[in-house]
Amino acid sequence: MTVLALNGIGHAYLGRSVLDDVDLRVAPGEIVALVGPSGCGKSTLVHIAAGLIEPRAGRIERDYLRHAMIFQDPCLMPWATAAGNIEYVLKLARVPRRQRTRRISEVAAQVALDGQDLAKYPVELSGGMKQRVAIARSLAVRPDFIYFDEPFTALDVALRRRMQDLVISTCVCGRLSGLFITHDLHEAARIAHRIAVLDTRGHGILGERRLTDEPQSRDDAAVFRWVQSALADDPLFRHIHDVDERQVA
Image 1 (cartoon, rainbow, N blue to C red):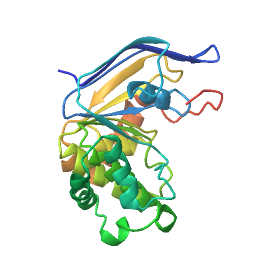
Image 2: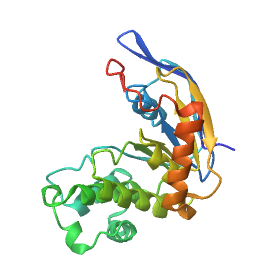
Image 3: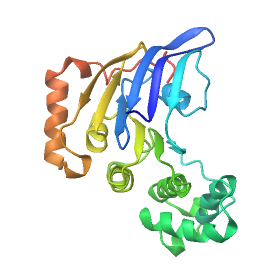
Image 4: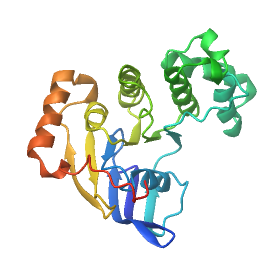
């Protein structure tokens, strides 16, 4: 079974191909990390999968009820409090007013936001707290699928790790499905059940590797060993740290 199937996806910008014949599947309760060098089209692919961009070619099959998306920029409305930013998506989802306060409290607890945090405006929040609000906002609509577009790239190492742990505790342990875009193989190995590698120029998926245990059971040593082995011995990961600034991400 699959909850997301990308079949022969192709796309171009200004006549230049950035994706061609990309096939990818995500199973129920599975987090798939998509890695590849900067500029290979990872973000374009996730935007297509989420319906933000119409592909030039191919077919998308979505067998989930509702999805949410978390971007690299938290994209919070500066004129609204943290609670107001979360409530906004509940209004869009037509959640009755009497249910919104309870829903906000539930998701705030999931991401460790307290009442004082919820009353603050984005300018008063740290980068990590802003990203917590963004995650809470995505969880508020009770999605069964989440798209992650390199959400932690701008955070420092310590904050990035906390956000990764948050994804593991709220999404992986909660049996949500998701597609996680990242250029960081360590991040992919911490969060995902399976890692797919996009071709350097977006010409299909080069291959996939399934990690043997559940994300919540992996310690730092296991993740480090897996990544070192992958980079040293597996040709699939040979070019994931290449950079081509002429390519469109």
